[in-house]
Image (cartoon, rainbow, N blue to C red):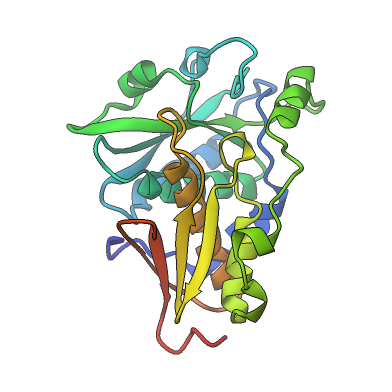
Amino acid sequence: MPSPGGRISEGDARRWLDAIPVRHARRSYSGDPVAPADLDELGALAARWTPWSDARVVLVREAPQSMFAGIVGAYGGISHAPSALAFIGAGEGRAEEVGYTGEALVLEATARGLDACWVAGLFSAHQTAEIVGLRAGERVYAVAALGHARDAVTVKERLLFAAGRSKHRRPLAEIAPGYEAWPGWAQAAVEAVRLAPSAMNRQPWRFALAGDRLVLQLAGIETPRTSKHLDGGIAMLHAEVGAMGTGVSGRWELLDGPDVAGFWPDPDAATR
């Protein structure tokens, strides 16, 4: 369950909702440093934003290129990013918690005019762990490049966009069958999910409405380096922000079995 201090404020929800349609994953950066004021604000958010007790984000103000070490030319390669975010959770924890917590920082960075890109497979977990200082039982699930993207999209990025089918988004009828009959808050929630990032743009999330509860399931196979459960946590954050855009707040609870998580609207909100 989320910790008592983990509620999204109305101001954050509005800002992050506006950031969702303008966020684009960019992998080639100018190398120009991020403004200290933006880093200060992101660092402060990372320190206070703890909706789950086993997940946290650490801002790396000066990120060495070796953090993003991977196979040259492979999906996820990052160049010249001056800063980074490290997404950390319990070694035997739930990746959904990490995805939910981390995506808030990515959307906040976007709202501040910065570019960011999740990297869950091809990064140096060992070096990142040394930089951020892990606590007992923790591991780094993913990182995000942070900075200002190059004005021109590089050939590498074009190839990566094509490989990930970046312009293709699953229709709402596929990710949320029967959504047309759902209350407005639930429709807005899944609409916000359609633009959520996922590894290779696989979009594994599927939603159903069970009474007043919005239920998340995950489709497709699990992979060891880029967990679909991390994608599921990102989708949870988008869904909640989308619902809050209609005035409906609530809480997520992680579940076991095919139902991964359920979102319960606050009392008197489910009919909006």
